[in-house]
Image (tube, rainbow, N blue to C red):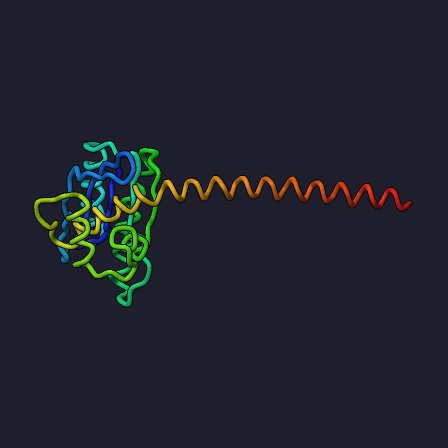
Length: 192
């Protein structure tokens, strides 16, 4: 499976493609950081991100897109820009009928380091090791994009099995409720 991982942002937007193989094997295909000037108009910055993401989607043909979910930030302006950039990425993927999954920062950190509280240096170190990279990806946005793709590759099989189990459990619950209703109805008719 090929995953496009995106750490959204307006000033710096990490973007990476990672291939996943059997088990937990992962391989970096490409990584970069898209940049837009802070003094440019918001619409122009979003267009720059959208155009770059479109180009990556066309060039790499991923199976799925993994985007970091804006979880909580104290700086509302930064959170808004991050969310807007993430929305542009999701839109570009949706136009190609690609599934998009949003992962929280703590989920990504836990997937690659084992701790949802890992700092950026720990994430960068583990991404470098897991992908057997010759050097650490810089800046941290690049490492974060790689980590998102790895997280998706490792977590989605579990999420898929869980969703399947939930679907089966819901069907069983519906059948059980129907049987109970039939039994109540039969008991009520028998009392008459």
